[in-house]
Image 1 (cartoon, rainbow, N blue to C red):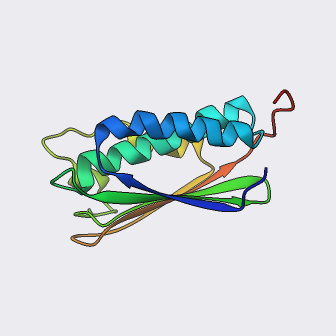
Image 2: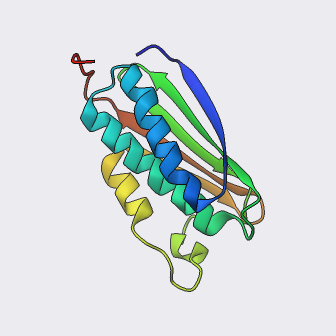
Length: 139
């Protein structure tokens, strides 16, 4: 894999998440990440980005950051916003009108580790470790 770290600054707009997932697929594919890992990383980051868009900000004119760093045998993924934050001990506290889905559950199932830091009014940082299965030698 030919990268060490990359950071994307993304608009907090629901319609842009699909574009980011496509770009992510291309980026990882060019670095010969295997198809299963590409799919899982797309799912993890898609869910994390959706959570930011749905819960972090009251207006869509804000941005958030996605960082991907390669470590031996794994990717370290971070999604950071400067939104409203929530009580990490009670993730349902961030739900608006019971609109919570399965995003964090899916992330925790696919990731080897997922840690959340959040403070009311100061935003949230989701740090994820994902173990790479291997590389695709067909690219």
